[in-house]
Image (tube, rainbow, N blue to C red; front, side, top):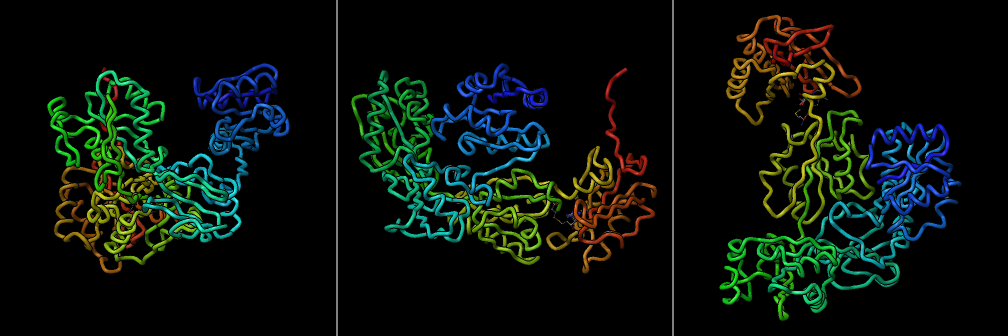
Length: 571
Ligand code: SAH
């Protein structure tokens, strides 16, 4: 919940705008004198917005602050609603994100003062959070963060190739920390951060657990802790406890997992029975239908390439084993939109910032280079060589890196996502960040041409025989679809668009509207409306999207409109 504190008329008006944007229970007003309101909100809320001067806010919250790990994010907004300033809890408390949200609602500017955010380097406390890395308590975040920012040499060592975001050039990969050099260490092994060190825990371990009815949380928990300690593994790398579905309601097991912040997942005995384990037991098979619960569940949850890091160990009523997941690289398929900066989605931006390797065409990389973290490795190539580019991205992900493969519009539409996934196997994680495809950008400037069923057809015969393209054009035309022609022309394919329009003309009247948007949303955007009979294909080039209307499409006040075509209400 976000507490809202305002003491002036302007502040109260602005607070009610926030309350409209984020209705209760997301927000709550704290009326009354500011000092009491701040005190109450501080205890009750995850975040606070104060419509007060920064100085006043600082005085009010100062006695209440305890630790940046637990303090709420506090954002101040000035009386003229010009600035939203996070003054506490900027990272863990979500203050920076809140300030951006508040700025968005009020039309203010967020004033971000945490150094790493301001220069585009991931703050070490958030570094890798989107990729599942957690900071180990005791890490010297401020010290190492300052070293990273100052350009001093910092080492980065990891015992498995976990995908991590880009870090600047002064952070160099080494086998392990070096004396006197600030270090970032990614490991699931028990170590504690020494001076000048930050340790991240990867999400690498799965605890497998079996239990007899009535096991206590203490017995279960002790066995879990012992198993980890004996194997020299850190509880910070455990995210999940895996068991048999029969035990998903075993209270001692659930309580032990909950106390440690771990989720519990259950598998059916048939699923567990087929997992090959080192220590099967006939007695267990007789009781549960699978010869192994703890080892099998851990390995199954840990997925492909997992190994058993600790074989099962038992107490009177509990069994525990530990599996280690294989490090998996990550391939993000990122659409960067049709060209305008405000048509790239926030999710695509987040994926670009999460990546340590970005793969794409030069012209597209150039569009987003300023969004990349310092130190991002860029593999840019010329037009063509699509297979190589896709393969390079997959190879980088297989090597364990966080990779973003970018494409204009949407990366999955006539673009790199399919060749990449055709050559990718199950050893990497894949996420898609959709983009605004050219048809949408063009439709938005033409009017509403896609209001009813529509088809996309690429006129490029590089990957598809021309006869097939012709067949599809005729089928879409016969089906009375609105048709978006991608890749309408190139130097080598001068006549394709004219042929395509002739095929459509066999099924539509000559006055059918045809819209064209070249460089939609980019500088130099050109928009043209014409008809099947009147359209000159020479107007279109490779930067153009051509939309041919259906039999219902009309021009209304200079805009291309395809009616929705069904009746809203009866009678
Ligand atoms: N993945 C892209 C499409 C790649 S095919 C997307 O989703 O948009 C390339 C074709 O897309 C171009 O030949 C052109 O027809 C169209 N195109 C891409 N960007 C465009 C833009 N800004 N304006 C008009 N057409 C565009």
